[in-house]
Image 1 (tube, one colour):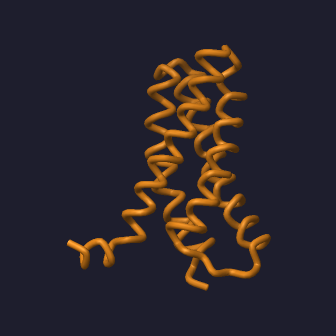
Image 2 (cartoon, rainbow, N blue to C red):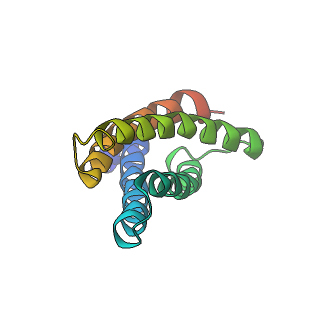
Length: 131
């Protein structure tokens, strides 16, 4: 069992922290949009920003165990990659909620599945590429 964990540690840790990042994103969105009645797009931007902050710290520390000394370059790269998937998330929300195809909460959950996959690929291949 330990061998399997060590072999797939990065993916396991990414999934754990990806789920936690998603929880941060969805909870912040829910509080702002449904409880505070703030516009869904504003709520989505704030939820994105706070979840990216959480994701950077956890991905750097626990998932990819980055040893990079150039934290600023790494952070800019991380936020740039997350900005790209944030735009994807906003587009998904605009299409599916703005055009009344799906309820906002369902659209948010579905969008997060695609965002998590894209974030892993970008983090692995662009941001934390094994310095």
